[in-house]
Length: 153
Image (tube, rainbow, N blue to C red):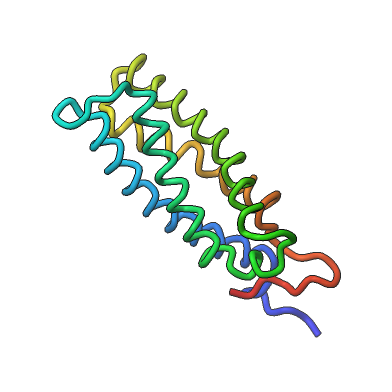
């Protein structure tokens, strides 16, 4: 019996990527809000690097929650270990992404003179593919192996 094309691994991966991007969109809103609250001269006026790390961490926790319960729901049910192991893995992978985001933020804002919020948005966009591919491959496996039910959310 053949699998309908829309139930193939490729389409399941595309669906997860779309969900990942929607979750990421909520993370962008969280990140931008927290960045404003802690970095803007009219609010707390934190150092840019510290403010970005703080805003990214709050967004990261938001994104983990939504990816766990929505994007990778089936993979989370089938994955070895519990949510704490996935949270640690998510932090490790996205921690590299945060480092890249800080680097890109400084590149675009400090060195190239882009508006802070445009620079922040660009840095987020650049690390999205890194975060999805690494999390799908190592944290919530995209796809299935023999004996593991296929993803079907």
